[in-house]
Length: 233
Ligand SMILES: Cc1cc2nc3c(=O)[nH]c(=O)nc-3n(C[C@H](O)[C@H](O)[C@H](O)COP(=O)(O)OP(=O)(O)OC[C@H]3O[C@@H](n4cnc5c(N)ncnc54)[C@H](O)[C@@H]3O)c2cc1C
Ligand code: FES
Image (cartoon, rainbow, N blue to C red):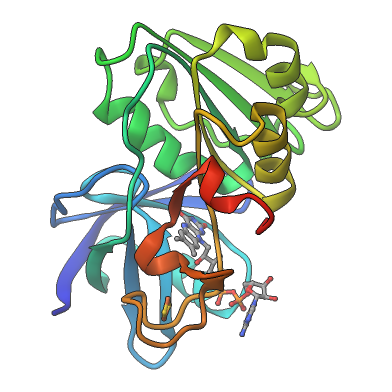
């Protein structure tokens, strides 16, 4: 059930954020996640940024250990799991905050050419923390906001969405929960899909640790239609 892969390349994708490319390809839909196991350390979920790529922010024990690994080191991976984004609409906005970028990057790359126009609205705390990968190759427009104004416009991505919301017939979002909540509110829960995050253990709908109202995020999400989440986040 696990695939053992070797890391072939790592690089700094932003402050405290590292990309890991490995020597195995996973068939996936953008938004789906894999469980990565490090023997003796634990197992954690990460969105696939591409078939052979995860992009990780260092937060605690597991991710700190992962950051010590490099070329030739092994990862045990199972998945992909969960429900990914489904492409709908013609003129769409992808809204990402912080480390919410990997599934959004994957979605832009997978769906390139399938939408009429794609605008990425990306928010980070500061220039140093911005993680944009090479997403500009896959979208028509990139609008960046930072909390401190050190890159792009000062403010939050949701302010851009409020100003320009009428332009987009569908919105796709991933990021911290306050960002998702505001995106859902601005869209009135309609024509919007968001990727939610909950603490996960099994990743396959067994343990219940990722419950979100009547849903299990690992099985029913992590991508949900806006209306499914009304009153839940
Ligand atoms: C579907 C999905 C996709 C994800 N994709 C990515 C990705 O692409 N890139 C990325 O960097 N991260 C991603 N994450 C988050 C990633 O899984 C976590 O950052 C990682 O698990 C942190 O592990 P850690 O041991 O380093 O930190 P931990 O020590 O586990 O701490 C991380 C956070 O979890 C909290 N926490 C710890 N234990 C519990 C508990 N029992 N109940 C509730 N909260 C707890 C801590 O307070 C802390 O805020 C994703 C998460 C999900 C659910
Ligand atoms: S992580 Fe176990 S049910 Fe979702």
